[in-house]
Length: 95
Image (cartoon, rainbow, N blue to C red; front, top):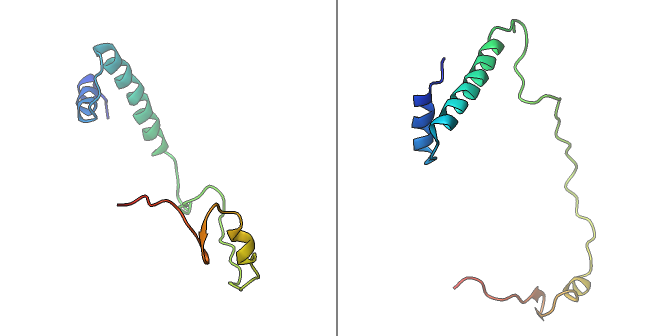
């Protein structure tokens, strides 16, 4: 697939980009090289190669969801400038 200056200008217009003629020519050449490289990848023999979603094997590490002791509430609430019983008081941000 050949990328032309007109194609670049059309896409630039859709993206609301204002390109000069020189920029459009340069981009057409550079984008053409990218498409050319992608076409070379399709020439590879992938017979028997399993598709992958990650370059390295990934595995979730799960642990049991167990209750553990936390910090004392009074100690945590002591860090805030203002509190109301068991909660921090913060400025209202939504009307």
